[in-house]
Length: 65
Image (cartoon, rainbow, N blue to C red):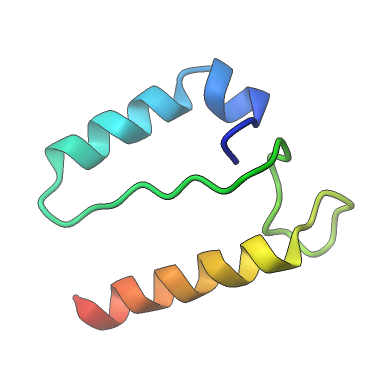
């Protein structure tokens, strides 16, 4: 999530950007919001739309490789 304080403020976003820059086949997708566990359906921060988009992007990536 683009406003997740853990991801954005603790260096994970910078590391993700560096990884994408160094990889031949990589993309970085940021989802709107501030929840850390947005794809975990067992917690209140679950975002069904963002989780579905994440799943579709992962499956597309795996299919294309």
